[in-house]
Image 1 (cartoon, rainbow, N blue to C red):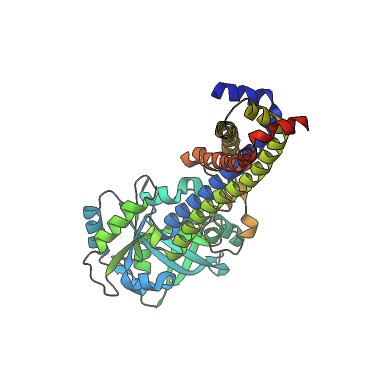
Image 2 (image 1 turned 30 degrees about the vertical axis):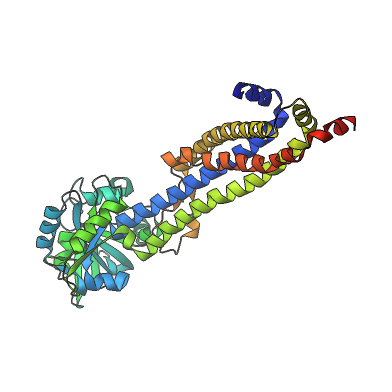
Length: 422
């Protein structure tokens, strides 16, 4: 029976060509948009983990309550003991301290007088550890645009955009003017040994990266840090294990303003909203294409029923049951849906793979943005990209044919002779 129906579809292209093309178009768009949403979601997670939250984040309770406006006066103290505890209790996570600071970068001329200044947003990390979690999370090797990575005390990196604006070349000296943990003014001299570009406008406008060991004494933060971030060794965020680790750390912990508290990446309200929105978009995307394609295929089925009016009448006249004819139409629709889904998935994955490599630049829309999102949006081909198209492809053809085929049951066998006479 299946072979018979398949031959009929192949020999009569008018019965299959338009429905197949409709399914191919819908499935292709579904796969591409799904991969695009997944790529954007993964990019936001990677950027947020690298520059803001880590996969896990330990701060003081007071800093966690104040969020981004938390000051270094609420920094973690007793850093060495805290790191030892974290590494002992949770050895499957790489823990690293960070200090966030802001200030002015002052560049002297040959006479020692200021020739240029610019505000900077600083990040002190374990910068000199070769192959450490920070270098992998920030992908410093790829981000480096000129010069080299720091290897000695007092060496820093600045964003390439900032260096161009200040006409700063690797090897030059610069002075950081900032405030200490206790609010007093401080200065620290550094040597800029390289420039970096992460492809994230919010970071590239004025970033400076220094080693945490160089910044601690400058900001009166000996054995202290703004936060301790945890990364899974493969740099892939896993929500369930991260949540379990955070709950285990927080169980029975003190809740004073200076006591440490841990949160996972999804605990950030803004990021959680973005991820939930991405899930909603994916669901809505599939639902919309199922409904739209069902309507199109329903109309196509109605037109096909009109064209095949005589054929169906003959089949009823020779004794074929209404239900059998209806089931044969459903089987034809499923064949069309399967073929269209496979072709649409292949085309959609090919387009998504191209967008994964090349992407689409949105840099001109992010000049003043504060979102941690890449300037180039890329799709991401995942196992779901190969399966997501089957849902709208099969459901739409099934729904469209199921509705349009109901007309078969309204055909009365007693009236067939009059129909043929007409």
